[in-house]
Length: 590
Image 1: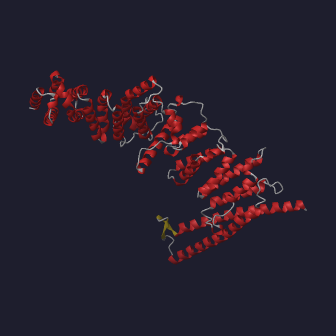
Image 2: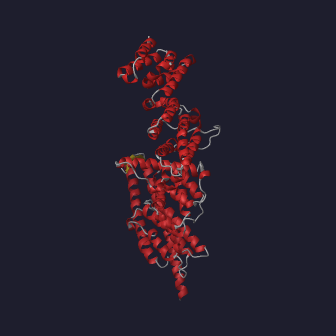
């Protein structure tokens, strides 16, 4: 019988000194104890452990029972109510082991169980062992900070592979127990937070930074997972949103250990890396950026911990501190900050900072490359918001930068339209805006009123840019008289005709002739085949496009011709306006 075997081992060990225990004794004790648990003799095992005579034996050997004990507790939890008594006995055994065993050995035993769990057993195992692990850590005298950090890191590493519940139903069901487990981990960390706070209150020169750093690492990991991807909006029907509660607790810990404001304002300066391997350093930097972006989002969009935020800081400083990590988190953060700023409030000097100039370029990438429509639209709105916040010289600098770097006709057309709006404001305001008139504007027009490859430019590909450029030129000719020449367009008219209008004429004639020839060929081929449903394949950038019939190809070609006719019509109108204005000026001089 398992209990008899255990008693025999206990009796033999009782007569030995603690220093005389051998490896064989540990193995026999573990096997006998495990057999007692598996055979349902948890009550008898509990009596053995509670016996005062066995205190020394349990202190040295009891931690070996952690593994079978955890398995039994989790197994009993899944059984019917008839096994509740056995589970209660196992829980009492675990409590006795925590009280009696060597803290160092028990710590390693508990951590090993967390490390070995996986899948749907992760949260139940962590929840079971958090309280025992906390008690053991509080008993440790040496390397306490290291052990706390190791425990938190191990727990978070085990939780990270689990999917984060997102919908209301998923959060309410919490099938894997992640919501409950995350908040339990915060409770686990609180005694150690209180210890740091107490030590800092005792002395303003508190130098024992190890425990504080471990707690900071835990908070950073928590910001990346689960908070970075968690649904944090208040959901109807959920009185206490588990992730909102978790976010509040993490912010509170950062505030308590006096790291909240340094993270928000100082993270762009960077920290010394401890990695010699560049790949590991890059991963750490990316994880840190994700965590800091999430922190900024929690504070400035969801308003967690905003009551701790000093109101003495100007909003542009906040925005600057957030730019470095903006694209690691949803765009709500950036949009929220911009909406709180006044138009024309950012000085052009801020564009000397790399983070400021990178933002519009990154927005353009989202606008042109992101497959998700609502994100593309939102990026476009934010680009306009971003431009509006700068002074005139800042807008001018941004326009030049985007015209040179966007490499996208649609974006360039949009920027040209915004240039036109700024010119209109400059011409209609009482004071003169030097950045969108005269020589500064002429320099900007050099980037707008030209064809990248002269007459051989792909007019169809660049149609958005060309139409925007023609509309801008038409506006300038109508709005600015040659005698006033506020915009400088009349000074540079010869250059515009040479670099833009004449090449455009030639390009239109070549393009129309080419497409008309293509239409003629398609029609002849269709008659020869006597089948308008013949299917052709098309490959673009090594990617095969959907098959096109001859009729579909003809529709595309006719659409291109319509675009050329539209460009030609606007071009003719611009040239007509120029001719009229020049003639009127000549008549005045006569």
